Length: 305
Image (cartoon, rainbow, N blue to C red; front, side):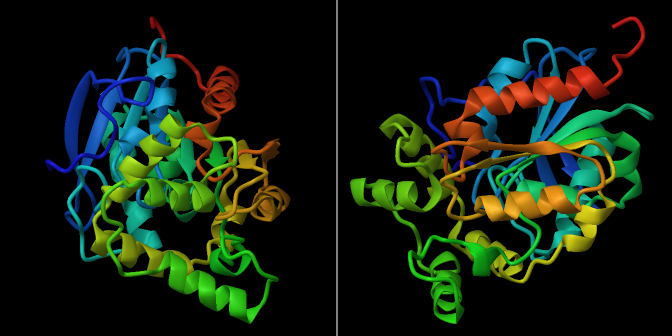
């Protein structure tokens, strides 16, 4: 695909992958996959969120690929993965399973980090055979398992039916986002990022989000509106860490705390002061450090590596 999905220079520009491949999901959906870093290094798999792409993980890829094998893929319809008529939590789980089977050797386990819808992908896949066979530990960033619209604080009024109705219409709008203008940057920053986010950081996120096709954005908004993965949280038995920004309006800290209470093997919640929903971009150092810590603790390096 030719659509621009990221900034092309500076600290927010994603590094070039060591190799790229196309993975077929269970229903034939084609997924764009990138592999960064040494082939014999401990593996990390990154799953991005709604309206984003592999470019969203630029900071983590750049730092981790020095001594990790980092796999990032575009969710169906996002980035360079073509749109699919099938949009569902089961489809997300199918896609993650397909990627894990394609990039990891039999018996090889990775740390999987999921941001927002990427975290929901992990919860949806929690009971899948390939997920269980290939997952050593998980990092859930800025995500939730249910009541996503009801608990969002994007609309700044008291919780209740009116706020839920308004939020559903704001997040599920069919209108195109258009070019990245100063007004568009202000809107995106308010809805998805902390108040201290620097302008280049906001622009990097805006370029990625605005590149998501309107039909794809709308289709997945309908899935997220009705999402209920509470059962998946209870089945996610691998060691799991949770990260959330205290200024997150899309998946507020109440979501992270509920995840922590339900996870069978939770390693705790890290709340990042003043950070919004885009934690891997807004707070790259603590997110990357948490992934490294999980790899060091839970991933066994292959013999001879």
